[in-house]
Length: 379
Length: 137
Image: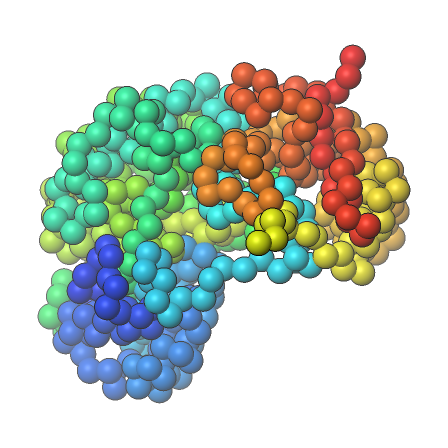
């Protein structure tokens, strides 16, 4: 895909984030979509492409009253929206549509109008993982952690520092769910969830949504908000079974998606001003820093513990507070994208000064899928 | 109220041999006749070279502890926390999820790379699960 041919011209989250007991999941989609459409100065009838995950595109298109000529229902977990951005950019470049709406929403806390997750007993997960007591992401996602720690000499304190640093960022974000400062000791003394992980190393469970509107760069300059260009993209999948990853020392999906995006963008790591790495659990930023090639895996824990990713550090990471402190409705990728767009527009509550390139890296399932989007505000 | 039960696997035509094996006290893996690749979970072709000529064979049932969590909450139906959910690396190469039995469910007792051996635990007349215990000797 060519660089900077497509831009984000509308971006918004739901009016409220956190606990939203007065809205069903589909209405959260609509709330986010209407906010994004207003942000772009468009009408619903201007939208000719739609992408969403978990809910089907036909549900969202019908509910909003949209008649699309291009649809994408890619649903690979929390990074689905990174893949939607990539697919939408390709579709716009190919002339399949002009203006794409991508929506995410989840009544993750209130569970209104949300289908419960179900693992069929004759699926591979149902036969070869479920009988051994996996029960929701906290029991599955941290399974690789002890091996990763042993291989690279990462300490419990270093992984705990991920949550501490991200809380510092969250404190600067009025919409963050958790803003009170915490220490490494607080993290290591919080309630045990699935050893080695404790409560403060696991993502929040909240309600919310977000939406993006993309169009060609040529049209983008006529929109009310500063365009944010798509500089590079990557995607991949590995396995729906965490036990069947090729290795627990890295994520194959990360290692494919991340470098693809860097290559397409034509940038090196030192060009990155702002970084989002989807943090459903505290080990993900370590995997991301290693798999995306920022540094050797052995250095990732120390890099974060030493404060390099905190406010004022040399690599600002998860500047909204992340899934650990900002919000996490179940599929957090959309909120990482929203923060990258805010940073590129220069309007983030914890704005990184003069940031020109933002890397936004997502995960789906338990390392099952990955998508990376690199944004820039310069064409 | 009936006691909550552990999730039961339901075999498919492609996995039936594996579950027949655990009932017969065998841990069955597959090997590609064309490229010798040993793989899991079961499927009637080689995921490395796509050959449909594959054979079923009995694993040694020996392996080592690759990684794990000790789950505290929420607990799956039929489990009493804390319990370890482990990934075992078999001597033949493939890895599989399992539980570690005959061993305290603590970080001190569960050492990465400790040697393990399969122990079959019958759930009912149709399903026997492959569990692992610390290897003897």
